[in-house]
Amino acid sequence: MAREESYATGRRAPRVPTFGKIGAWLGDVRKKEDFRQVTDFVRDYVIRTCPVGPGDVVLAMPVEQRRLHSIYTAAKETGAHPKRLRKLLDRAGLLQPAHESLSDNHVLFDAEAAREVLGMATNHLSLPGLAARLGLSVIQARSLVSAGVIVPFTPSGNGIGTPAFSMEAVDRLMARLLADAVPLDEAMKVGRVVEPVVWAFKRAQCSLAEVVALVLERKLGWVAARVGGNDLSALFVDVTEVREHVRGRELTGLTFLDAQFVLRRSYPVVKALVEQGMLRTHMSVHPETRAPIRVIDRDDIEKFKAEYVSLFDLARERGNHHLKIKAELEAAGIQPALRQEVFSAAFYRKSALPR
Image (cartoon, rainbow, N blue to C red; front, side, top):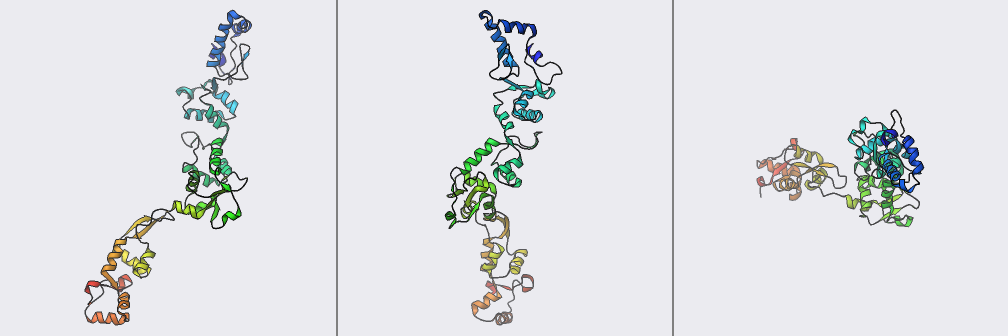
């Protein structure tokens, strides 16, 4: 009876049930000790089964605490749009399965269980709002979200729409980041490569999320903050220290430039040796840039040096002009194993050379 009266057909907003003449009678007799248990039972039943709360009056007595909310009353209380609020509550598992067929004032849920969701719906930030709060561009803020540094309480997708972020959670994050930072002083910059976090990650050739994680995990020995600042643009780190932490494993081979120094040959020679299969390559990750890079197998370089010698290196070893050495080898019937026309340099097998 209370439900039916509270949700009269066609009404958008629920009303507090009055029970008509019975309710008027109960209101009159509620002060009598003999009827106290009856009126208290009915009043408690209404509070437990209808979306009434502070500001409502049941049987001539004000309601002190809300037990149930409807989408309508929650939207009115928080200022959130009913449609979005319904999606948030559904995602949190607080609505009955058949809620989609019911109007906003007929969808009930536990007010206490939904307190956190309603709080976030009241105090939330959009992605641009998050970026502004953190002193970042939208792209930078999105990168922190993608890395899991900041978790939205309404992820995009699944009908929720654009992500929203708890303002309280974002404030807690900034408090953690700034907690152990020392006040920034110009004297502190001596001997350090000091940059704000929003720029330091570029100079350290890593991601913004990595630098933020280093600060959160207290892995940096020096973190400073500009006095009065409350966002990431006011947080400073030593780029050199960041680089030490984010540097990856050393390359598993030699770069083409390194190979040129080891073989003492030009890039076209090294390139030809690779293309002709004399030197094998594989992909490795650069320790500083973290970009994939093609490197030459170290073992192949050593094997090549042990088996072959260039005409110029041979001339240097013997202290003669390379043309004289070439003429002597030709006279002895020794030809280059790797020809100049193909490899941009002539190489001889060491085993074929006279002692």
